[in-house]
Every structure is written in C-alpha cells, then in structure tokens.
Length: 552
Ligand code: CA
Image 1 (cartoon, protein in one colour):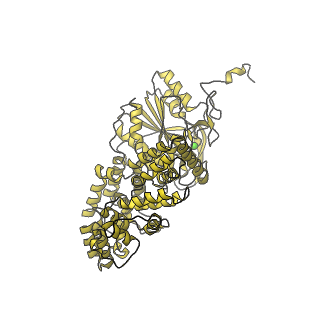
Image 2: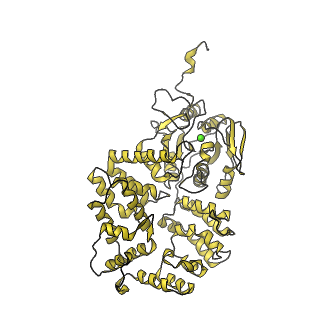
Image 3: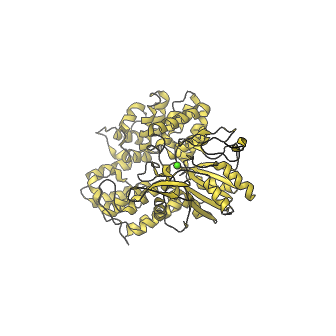
C-alpha cells in the first residue's frame, strides 16, 4: 500500500487494460481499451477489407454480423449517403473484392425508405459492371427482399440499357456463377426489347432459344458459334484476334494451347491476366525473351491501363505471392517464375495506387507484428495475413515520401512466434520494437520475407511514440498499421502521442491504418491530429499524405 494512493490515477498515462478516464473508450477483443469506430468508418472498413474468415479475436460469423449490423445502421441513419459511399468506393476501384460492396448495395435495395431503394437500384449497373457481379447481387438481394416490381425493372434495365455489343460480351463471358445464370435473371426480370432487334436476339441467345438467325445478332455471338465449331487452336486463335472473344467463351480443349493464349494476351482483362500468369508460364507461353512476355510486362507496367482496369493492389500482391513461389495450391504443374514478370508485378503493385503527392513530412511507419496480426487473411487471399499486408502497404508510403523510417513492434517482455518452418518459438522481446531497414528500392517479396521472420508477442501500440521520444527522433507523422487490439502497455497510444507532442514541441500526427474489419481504433476521435484509414484502400496513401501535410 502506498502512502499516497491518489498518485496512481492519471489522465495522462493510463494502463491499456483500463479505459482512459472520462472518455468513451470500450473494451477491445484483446481485453485492452480503445475507441469504437463510428458506423461510417465501420462501413468503409467493411466495404474495403470485407470479412474473409475469422480474425484472431472474432469468429467469421461474429464479424459478418457486426459488419452487416453496421451497414443496416448506416442505411437507417442515411440511406442515400450509404448508397453514395458504396458507389464512390466501387467506381474508384478502392475495394479489392466485390462481395462486400455488392452485399451492401443489395441491403440498400431493400431499405424501408423508397428513395434509398430507388437510388440503390439505379446504381445497379454502376456497381455491378459485369455479369458475375450481377449474379452476386441477385443472390444477396434475396437475403433482404423479394422480386418486386422495382427490382425486376432494375435488372431488366441492366440488360436493356447496354449497347448490344457490350451486352453480347457480358453474355458470352459470364454465362453462370454462384447458382445463377442469365436465363434465371431474364425469366425473373422479363425485359422487353424491341422485337427482332440486336438486343432481342442477344437475349434469345442467352436463354438458349434456337432456330433464329444470328446474322442480325451482335457479331460476338457469331464468333462464339464459330469458336464452338473451330477444329484447331489456330482457328480459335485467329477468331480471338479478329473478334476479341474472351477466354471464357473458348472451347476448353483449345485453352491448353499456347497459340490461343498468345492471341488472348494483348486484350484480355488485366485481372484475368494476373490470375493466369502461372498457367501461362507452365504451358510455355511466357518464357524469358518471348514476345508474349514483353507484352505482359508492358501491360502490367502501364499506369493508365492499370487505372482503367481498376486492378487492385491486393490482386497484384496475391498474384506476386503465388507466382514467385513457382507452385500452386491445387496440385497444379510447377513453373519456373520468369524474372521479368516478377519485376513487372512488383512495379504494378506500386503503380496500382496511382500517383501520390507526398506530404514531405518526417514519417515513422510502425508495423504491429503482434500475434493477432499473423492470423486471418486479408481479402480472402491465402497466406496474406494482416502482418504481411501491412508490410506491403507500408512500401507505398515508403516509396513516395522522402523521409521515412520503418519499425516493427509488439510488446515488451516474453513473446512467442511461429518460425518460418511453422513451429512455435518463445523468447524475450527486450524492447518490443525493432527498426526495419526497409528501402524503397527493396522488392516486395523481400519485404514480405523480412516481416515474416520477426518474432511476435503481445500488443502495445504506444511503443512507436515512446521509441521516438526515447531516441530523440523528430517525427511529424506516425503511421501505425494495426488491428487496434492493443492491451499490453502502461500508457495508451493517444496519451503517448500527447506526451511526445508536449516534450518535443512538435505537433505530431498519427494515422491508424486498420488492417482488420473490427470496430476498434486507437485514434482518439476527439483529436483532429489523429486519423483512421482503411488498410488496402487504394485511396489511403494519398489520404494519409494529405492529412500529414495538413491539406485535409
Ligand atoms: Ca495483437
């Protein structure tokens, strides 16, 4: 017992297992205390990070429920704004996966408020740009409502408002998915095109009506028929080159031929291209010095093409992680990765964030490498843990800012980690924080390897600020990549930042980059010098730079 018991209470240094006095902090999943994010922040986290499997602290079901509840609360609070958030993120390609965005749009299409429903249905072709996305929507929307007149009309318009050639492309490319086909949707929606017109013929083709003349139908449908009759890969390849038939519309036996793939490479979607790099290498289409290899490299490093295709950095990172391994997960033929392709993916990753106007501030990037960050997957990509995703994300800011240092932190004391061989190891993390010698010229796969090998233990998100103070480092902008499940320290991160500001006189700012779609943040919502962004939002690096520079 101390003689002076009042000394233990402080609003300036509070143990993380206690809430900061007189704030609305809540208990996080780890038993520490943080702030609950507001529903709009939660919505953005959901739309961009999604829910793919459990996190370290919550089951997949629990995360789905929490996120879906937040979506419904946003719709109840301001339905039109919810639709606008969804559309904005989708149009800018900020989301790595389509499921969360389409799910949220489906929920809006069932809102009580008629304006919200109308706005959501009007946005259907904007958010669901492909047949696959439309099928996804059809499945989700049934979880919220029935096929009333408004929904039927919106789906009918999806087909009728397209130029017939663009419609034909959707019809041959995406014939069915997730238990839905165009035939199913056309039967429900009953669109009424002009009789005998190109759209009418295209829709008749989609529902399998035979005995009509394709001469008046969009050219791609004739090409599709010709491909189904093609007797050699060379014939199929010639059709691809002359008509732009997508690979999904080709006879599968011809897809084993590199002649066909060489014809596809110049125009196929970039998303499909990066997913097929392994296949293209194992079948010999991509080899060092080949013209096809040069074409792929050129396409992957063309910033304008990347932007138009909305190729998300997560898709590039997933492709890079698989491709450089030289073997697939489903017993596929191994391949010898082509160095030029690995390099091109590395560059494509950076380019896919667009041009970033730097803040020009002294920046400390701090990666939470505690145990929880090594579990779970980001955007459904096998092997892409929040820890690895953070490292990749940090490279974008590292490459764009002139003055950056990077550290990895866990907590002080005994910790455990999984070695690269997959066995648990234990040891002491004396400082709980290690400087990382990352360079902007370093390759992404090398960076991933560096962070994969670090030990991890508890979580103390105050360590980056305490470290900077201890080492006398002048920092304008702290960036912490974390799940905000902090619990191990004697002072909260927001208090450590204030202590740093007081002692150095620098008006340092803090950005929290959320790497898990949970409801917590270490950023004090009442401090304008702290910002929450969503990890793997393609808009996040620019947002962070603008915040650091005071441009927000
Ligand atoms: Ca943790």
